[in-house]
Image (cartoon, rainbow, N blue to C red; front, side):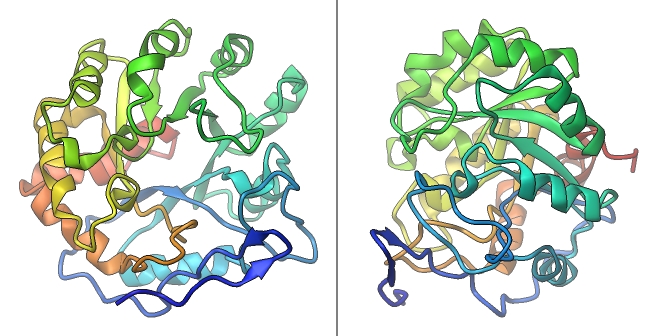
Length: 301
């Protein structure tokens, strides 16, 4: 069933809200599990969307997400700076200040960010610097060796969101960065229809062989226009898990922005997909808990 068309706010679409009452997953996640990719917004009267943002959103507050965690069986989460606020970190800092034990952060930062500003973010729980691929647009930060080197001083990793087959163009630039870890968003956003033998997916395997690269098993709806449960993504997930389980993490991508005109994911179903993607319980615990807590600096499980 398709969602209703979006309403417009000025020239920008208002992104559809997430499913309000997702199913309780059949799969019980281990205690201390981590959702490694979420976005939050609002309150709107305090935090305006960037003029360059491609969308606006209703308030998606920490309290709303924490209630979802209780339904899904999650305990921690990683708040990723999305395009909505651009490189304005006020909202990110506010959430990390209010919920220091529950959240860690990934920041989109302006090229003019100083080392002192980065130190403040580090103290609040930011653990990574996010870049996007060349075709994402919206004035968001592209790969910057200078910024990556500054982040490296704090032990931060680089999180990168490519589009389609961009990983073929940028992999060498990413691996040239000094950071000890490079994390690829949403299966490296590779088109799932191309399967596991497509050049972009094989390039991800080559990157994994360096021992520095991680992949987020998140946002399957970003890799395909299929309806849930996104069957073409399953071979990608299984292949990645088999190849480098020690450098896989998982996330919901809640509240699933930019899904206008498509079926909104049921977050309970996204949890249950883990039974198919990672059928081995011990390995699943490693990915949804232990790897995540290690990568993002949560206290040991």
